[in-house]
Image (tube, rainbow, N blue to C red):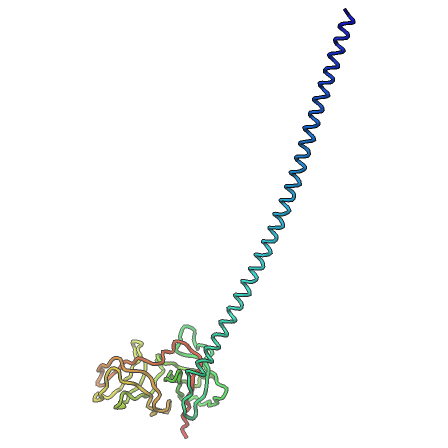
Length: 259
């Protein structure tokens, strides 16, 4: 009986041993499979991260390249704009601002406003203009029309354009050549004052310089009459200027010789 019990216990121990071996084998297989799975996924994740990093840096380089392209394009646009402005000035000089067939006419260029915010006074320069007389008033022509006057002041040449309170010169009105003085009135309008009361002028009459004040030669076109009224025994006429002086650039300066 004891031998049978002993044998039975040996069988049970052996079976348990085999069972433990199978469990360990299963655990080993599971661990091995899990380890392989983790290795595969880690390598896959590593490759994915590497690709993402390469892609990010590639995109960053492309963004930087495009940013540099934008900066270069912006710079080129400014250069092109400056060139276009110079071309426009040259076009105006060569095609529009045709030099009058008169003596003592000099090319001058406006290079700055005398006072910022006040656009009716500009500093002028001209390589060939040399008259330093501070008492002399010169005429300015732009686009073939009277544009204002110029004077020597503060060691420089100042252009005073139509519409400024100090831009004043003599004119003829219409076919009758009625005499008047172009100036700027208190309301800020460009008008012709001191026209004789018996003068026959009407809206649409053309206004030209009369040359009697030695500022312009006679016949430089100024504008057309758009309104006529009576004031203090004289006729006052409001004028629509041909030259609006909306932009500045080159002018022709008229220097009448007093000799």
